[in-house]
Image 1 (cartoon, rainbow, N blue to C red):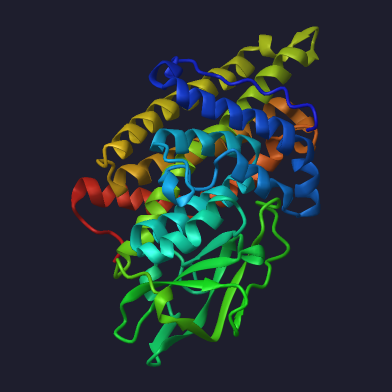
Image 2 (image 1 turned 135 degrees about the horizontal axis):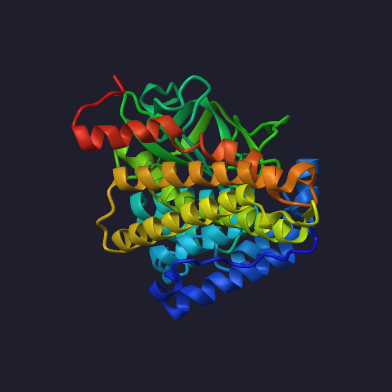
Length: 392
């Protein structure tokens, strides 16, 4: 879609709740997406290629570590600004947002939060500038929703560790310079390790044949007796609360990002419905089309208010993991349903690359699964409101 005609929709004037800085940041990201992403994203998806020139642009607009303090190269922004950036990036493409989300919430966040000062100064500025790209290793071939069952492990060899195992479905893996990997020590405790490309025995084979997130690079992480220096252990966290803390940050970003995908589908459907004439009048004049469009903007508006409130709680350090799960599950499901209805409004044209609809549908089929499936997040809410764990 080389001619990006997207217009933002704010039915409940949620913009009134934003600061001028928030709006300036959001608008600058939107313009970058229109200029640099929209003209090439359809071609990139058809070719299943991640346009590497996006990395420089993402760094320039502050999409890497927006909430990381400026002394480490981050933007020093609040959580609502981070969410707005993710929303505008996913409006462009979920794969684009994934690249920035992983870099920020799954790589820079754990190094800043769980690392020491030496690690922060070594890695964060280069990650913020895009000189180094990162990935996050938690999911394994046999352990997705149950990360506690992971098999990846490392042994203390005196002056270093030796890591063995594998991870899969890892965004950014094929080109990542740095990997934050979660593995069990000899006592069975989950710890975080920072790996660097070039370590002997560490490889990142790319995953091919995807029908979703085709403009995002996905791969595996394979550890074959990888020698990891002891100074690469994240010292300030032990157990699954480490990776789960990262996922909370990433899921929060996804809850905003999904709104962007939904808005893009709604905007395209609304415009198409006004322009497409059948039976002598625009299809927007028919009751069933208006029903679809009215329900779309209603659900988007509910998600906008929900996520803004979550951002306020996040800024106040009061957002719970269960609240974040609710927003992630609700908003991604909302976006997927809107994308499907938008495809109906576009008719046959909805499956073509002339419009973004089918691309969003395919992407959202991944987003509704990764970083906590739709059903797992439902059970997190269920456990929170009943006090009963239904996972086991």
